[in-house]
Image 1 (cartoon, helix red, strand yellow):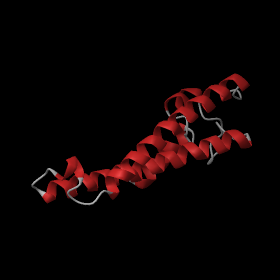
Image 2 (tube, rainbow, N blue to C red):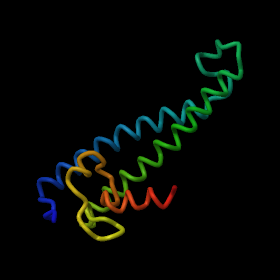
Image 3 (cartoon, rainbow, N blue to C red):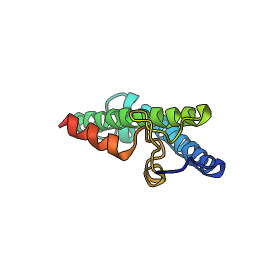
Length: 122
């Protein structure tokens, strides 16, 4: 059974989440600008193929959604830290392993519940 996270560990995860949040905010701003740029405006409008510009803009929009989702998860993890529920599985209530939090500091569920959820989706 995992012991509760120490104050030092929570501080470390908070710093890690804030760093990730700052990076994601920069990525989101950059991707928003790229996704909202008018067709043909990529590369200074130098492209002769509008399909290439549209494809690049679609990739930027797809990445933007992904980065926004990740940013939302990071913000939720920071909220769980503030509420004192960080590191606790939202499904079963057990502690999320430190190893899992080291890899995915915004994890909402323990590995057991995450795997069970993956099996249900397939």
